Image 1: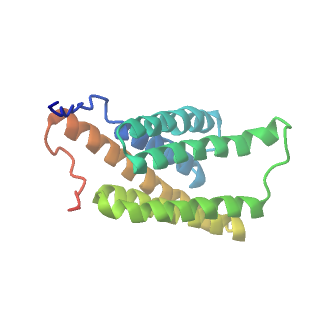
Image 2: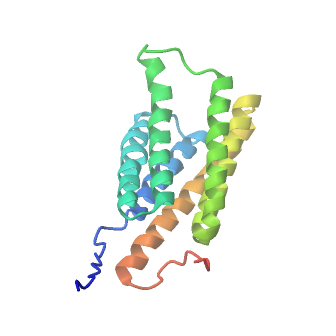
Image 3: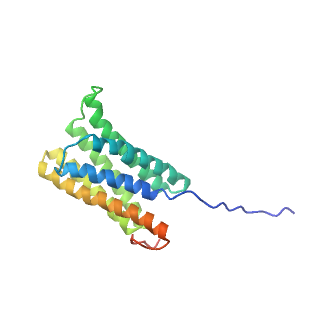
Length: 196
């Protein structure tokens, strides 16, 4: 008789969630400081969109695949691509490659991202309260931005900027909580774990 041997392999890869959350959060805060009217859209925001909001989140998403975390893979990779497409929508017309997106097409773009984020928000009900807050405020942000573009109402766009700062700050908090709680081996910053 051949004994059946079960091999258990320990996952020693790093937790990619802090990287993804911080890449999203910092970039979101900076863009929404612009949306709220505090400063102009500049290369600083676009560079953050490409490298930290974009590439760093895609890297985090790929790392989540190794962790067998479909939610993390989908969220981080998708929002990394969101930042890259947003920068492309701004930069490509300035380079003369294509006409700028119409307000109607931007409304469709933002609404689709809002719907996608709403579905991810439902997924957070099995995760933790901090992520629930991030995804709830992000869903609201996409729809506020869509309404602002659809109506041309500067007040709505500015309000969306303030709401986006809250959303980004909540992602920064959640990322830092994941990081510090892991480093210290105890709850330094609570995230409100949910009973699964």
